[in-house]
Length: 158
Image (cartoon, rainbow, N blue to C red):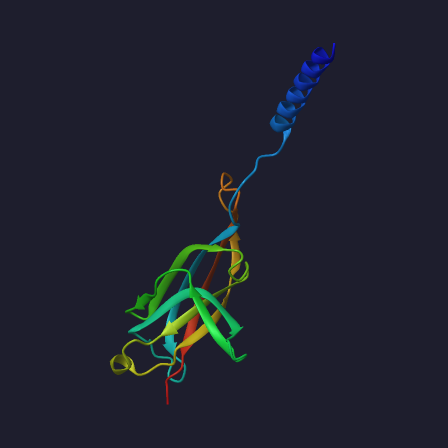
């Protein structure tokens, strides 16, 4: 009798476990992200002339304290830097939501060759992003498509 009761309990537990597994929601692994599309141009802050020969990099700017307790600026790029050869640029990719949120993108401007078109300061610009649409319906982690059309005003080094 004891063995029969044990077998019955095992079968009941097996059926309950299988039904709970079949009825539960799907487990997903990943990180929410957005798709962004930023178009822009780089101009001299004083003259308004197009600036060529600089580089732009999308990323995440932050401040941290180093070992001595001094606050230091940091920057983590999402993509490799892009040359601005004709004064315009286009950045588009995916951005994980934990890297700065939905509403902004940080762009770092660097001038690798100061002798080419004037010497411009390395700077980080905060670009506000606007929602342009929803992501694909099959992509559960896509939180939407965002974008901006911007003008970066580069400052010369004195």
